[in-house]
Image (cartoon, rainbow, N blue to C red; front, top):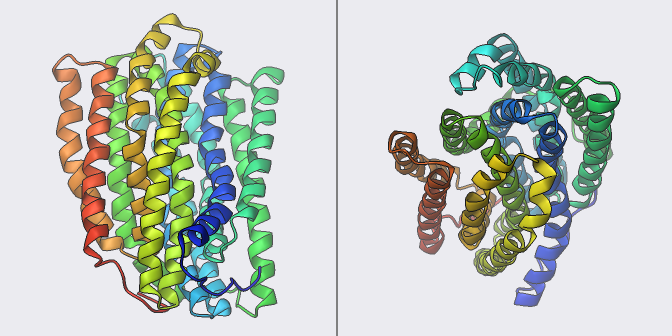
Length: 445
């Protein structure tokens, strides 16, 4: 860990180099996260439709349990980047340690809730009688890795704020590789079925957390930042992340409603939804790589008092987001014959997921704008607006999605509702970015 360079002179090429330097390794780290679920989907999918349907429900619950605390990464990135821009690296690392301690506390609390309530949660999601046992097994085992994943989120935020996205890339690649090997070995080699997949993921997650802790603790000691838990600092981290928690809960509610609706359509639609949702998550994380660069760059510009630089960087990143969305959409259309057989051999599932994949493809440019502006506003510490904007989006999406099974619609109709949700998000974020009210300079917002 070293002091980040001073804010560079503004120009499109300068911004391009900055964005590439942070976004390329961030892309590798981000796509590794949905690849964990995609590997599990590919391995378990060949065990049958019911195990895959069970994974769909359990994965949605687990992703929710972890992702609602993604503020551990996002808020930490913005806060650390501002202090780096202001030239106070010890304070930046101290803030990062507070985030890691908060992650451990939250992880313990989540385990205490998920383990005893797993059957009820699966039933709440509408899993069929054949899929429910698989879902409960996967959920209970994988929940043991939640504290590790929250530590990974917090530590990743520290490194991103320090303008370091390479270390998260190396850790993510290593974790993904271990997870893939363990999944195959435990599911097929050891004959553990879906439980083997869950254990492989937990082991990989714990290994990733251990590496992150080693890196961050070493940096904190080198720069004289305390490693001890500080009640006031932990409380401040929680308060700063509260608006982002509301924003993320609203987003997760959207995704949970989508999975619950798909589950009520039957095993074939929910199995197809799991495949489409896995790909959608992969694409989202790919676009979010530019947003991660945005968080770090915008936070640093604002911390250094450079409002004009923040505006210019925002404009350039939106251009990148649109272009990336077009490319990703075309890749989905062209590559669909190659990746669909990787997840299922069931003709009914293949037929159900194809129209939904095309919807995902055509909405990628919209997604590009959404993720980039989301990252820019997070980097600026504009959490309260993000919370209200996502609540408004949920209010539009929920009634539309819940009407799908009532009106006799299928998986395609559900994914058109998802497209509507992304459009509403784009409008609310664009209005905020255009207003300039997110620009507040200084070491803290």
